[in-house]
Image (cartoon, rainbow, N blue to C red; front, side, top):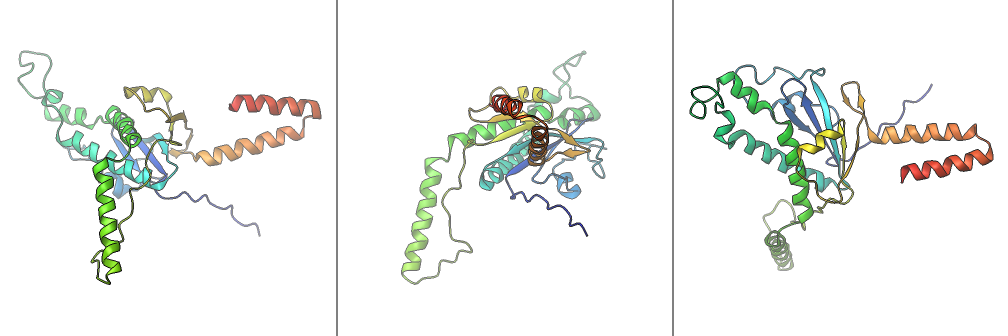
Length: 254
């Protein structure tokens, strides 16, 4: 009996998936490749009637991009900041965004409730700009005050342990987690979407992302498939052509 193929195990926090509603341009973030209905709906604010769906339809929510981080702490920190920026967009947007721009009441009257909901639901450009801002913050590193606070906490706990006293802490404080943008890769279903951000920090790599039905395809599986196909093609080539093919493939990858 043939055994099932082994599944890929991705460490929690190393990948963040952006899913976009093709009708309303709403965006939800996910730490997993498939969307969890309840967790994703919790990210969508109520902006009026029919602005929050009863469930997520796979034919409407398409993958926008995938961000890959070398360390889980980097991905979890970026995910938390993305959610914080999203909350700011939902609660502290400028009033001019929902004000009439034409007609006799231009600049003095709000848009109708239905139009206001459509304007506030469109978060595609904001989400991409937020991603660039989050990566820029991670490139700057931790603030000096944050590092000193962590060091004081660690020193205090170690001193109490040396004296045999209880620390009354559930978890020993750790040093600041690793951050930065080295090795961070953003895979886009449409590379032109990256232009919604004014600038991207140096060191961030951009690449394409293919779709697998209604979800984002696993990049590792794609790379493995390409490698297998290359090996099968190499078997059919004679020695001279084989060496030339390898050289051309190496130049294409570079």
